[in-house]
Structures are given as structure tokens and as C-alpha cells.
Length: 272
Image (cartoon, rainbow, N blue to C red; front, side):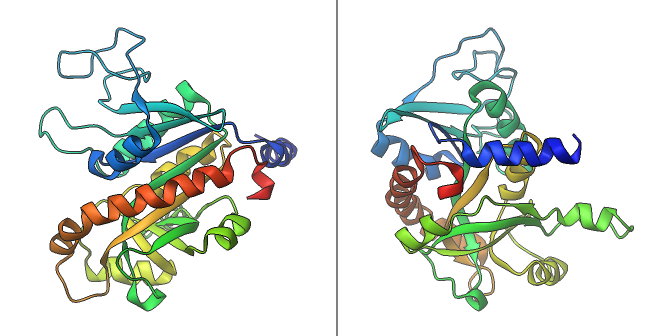
């Protein structure tokens, strides 16, 4: 894509009125309260692809990825909530960047949304003013565990994917904002800490940068809505704090996301 095409594409995207929203949420436990609150229904299979477990994929996405798609309408607009589903071999949620990127790709092809919202839980940084239960809106997405100490590849590893600007949404709803830094581990090692600090990260997750990267490839506006479950620079074990606060954070997401969705619907991207 040449420079003029990119400029025209960005201009057209900014004028797009939002009628179809794709919400990517990694875990079923994170998504369930929102799905129930919005009254969404699970999509039925419209193809003959196996879900990798000998059955049919109960969604509109092609291929063996066991993602789950829920759909419904809000204010005469289409809402799709997509989760990564359960791994058929291990029986746990498909978290992390590989599944997040794949599901986003398949969802963009099947749904063609006007905007992608990556919703979910995250770790927050006390140093950035985060507390458990806080809602953050992304200002950008970066990676902290793709360490490739070769010129050019170092920058690619970090990524630095833009989030669509949402100043009016943030002002209206009063949520915090900051950089989302993404890695494939729930915990973090000292080198991660170093890179997360360099990323100026406010929150840490396991999917955001992958979703943003795929959305950018398809010239689809994207931003994140993240609820803090644990404090990255706190003194409690991450896994204990995450499990302790997951249910409460999912309910907080249920409260936040309808407000976010109501705000973005029927607006041009440029008015967010």
C-alpha cells in the first residue's frame, strides 16, 4: 500500500459511522457477564469446518479455531463478542497472542466490523496510578517479550501499534488512559520489567498488541478497554491476585462496556 492509499484509507476510516462493533475478549469468564447483560446469542455454524475436537464450530468463523461468537443488536447496530474458546487438548481458555491474532483475523474476515474493541482484564502499575478495579482505555499497544537485539527487529519486536484516539469517550466516561503492554506470560521477569518501563506502560495484558497488529493490517480502527485485576509492581503473587479478583473485574467490565458501546455507536470514528 502506497502513502496516498494509506492517507485515503485513514481518512475514509475517520468518516466511517460505527454500525458494527467487534469486541474481542480472551476468556469466557471475562465475557460471560457482558454477554448476559447485552442479551447476546451464540452464533450457529454456517460452514462444515471441524472445531478440532471432532464437532462443528458453533460460530460463524471458518477453520478449526474453537472460538465462540455471540451476536445481538444495540441501538439498531450489530454487536459481536468473540472469545478465543477452549483448547480441545488442555481444556483451558486460549489466552495469549497466537490465538488472539488468529481469532481477530478470522473475525475481521467474517464480520467486517467498523471498529474492534479489545476488552478484558489486565495487570496495572501502581506507579501509573492504577488500582484494582480501575478501567483503562488504551492510548497505544506495545510488546514486552519479543526481544530481538538486531537493528530493525528490535523496533518490530516492540511493535508500537496505535489505538484509535478516544478523547471524547474518555472525557465522557472518566476512565483512565495509558499504554497497553503485551506478553505471553502472566508473570514477569526483570527484563520484562525493564521493557515495560521503557514502553511507558500503564497496564499489562496477554493479547492487546496482537489484536491491534491484525486490526492495523486490515486498516480497522481499534482500541482497548481493560479492567485491572492485579498490580504488576505490587507485593502479591500475580496469579493469586488475578484469580481473587477475576470475577469482580468481569462484573466491572460488564458495567463499563455497555457505556463504551453506547458511546461509540452511530458516531464517526473521528468523534470518539
